[in-house]
Amino acid sequence: MRLVTTLAVALLAGTALLPTAQAAPPPPPADRPTLQRPAPGSAQSAERDTPRDTPAPGDPGSRLTAHGPARGLFLTVAADDATWIKGVTLDCAARPASGTHPHAAAACAALATAGGRLDQLRGTPRNCVKRYQPVTVGVTGSYLGRATTWHRTYANSCVLGEETGDVFRF
Image (cartoon, rainbow, N blue to C red):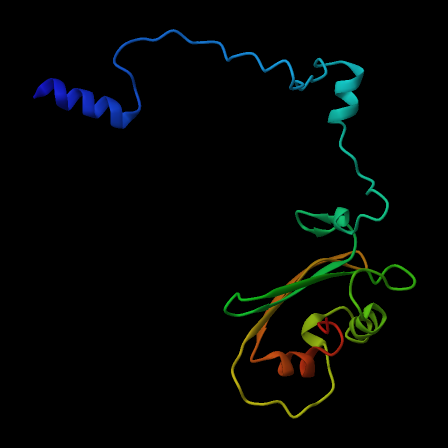
């Protein structure tokens, strides 16, 4: 019984009771090419391992970093129940305003009117339905060189538009 318990514990722990020799991996078949990595310290290795700061032409995602876009703002709108999320980039420092925001010029004008303070945004008054379907918005990045992080939840998308105008109209 003790031997059976020891074998069961060894199997569950993923260890072998007897030492085994390390077998070399089998060689690849002759008809499949193998990946040849450059030797460490070689010119090819240095070229492959050098980080690239400049985005590739036409690559819109290359501007995003771990902390938002490299320059400008990353705006998100999401349903409170996480069934959908949208995100765009907005660069108000560029002339004309740029990014993936469909109304970049109007959004930058609204931000300029508010002095870059997202709590001060003003939209157009509407008659919104009093249905609670919360949406959460967020902004990360920099606005005219000033680091910005901001999040807020609104009762529904109509109230969001009424209070923020064109900034989150995407």
